[in-house]
Length: 248
Image (cartoon, rainbow, N blue to C red):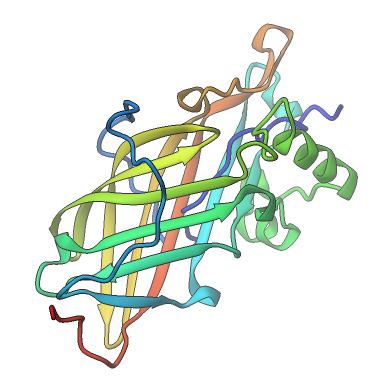
């Protein structure tokens, strides 16, 4: 087993962006009780005053960063994941942006791991390329029974529960589902609007142990993976030319 092979036992989406500056989360995770959790994840239904925004996928970026840790951490590697395949709904309420809604879902097995071009772009501790064998081993362990158990829990889902503030700065309470666990977390958002385009960017920190996952560790923590995962995103949205939905 490669020393980095289980480095990515937690990843995301929504989830994240090269152009966006990281924004620290404004509150830690709040566990969601079974009664409070959403019973199912259903498509959002357009309501009066809302406009469905299209996702400009080539410009949208969702990334997650996993870090080496421990006294011998330099023997390991940092890792970066990116998502290009995902489903998202963004319903904008222009009269009251805090009433807007977002939902996003992606399959864990569709995440791209340690893309050489992306590692080179990031530079620094990410600059060193990894060979195909190391990436394949990391991916297999990440998705397997000792990691995310993607066969049993294939999806990562996120939905907004509450928005506070006014553009260009908002705070969002989101619910995240991963590995059979649901958690709520506040995060800060940056909103930029130009003509028919809206960019929403931000960042959050997830902890593997919050989702019932145990970070990789060897020799009593001498070589380990940090519990914290940094997620960055930039969603590029396009307004339609039509009017917002109206009540019947």
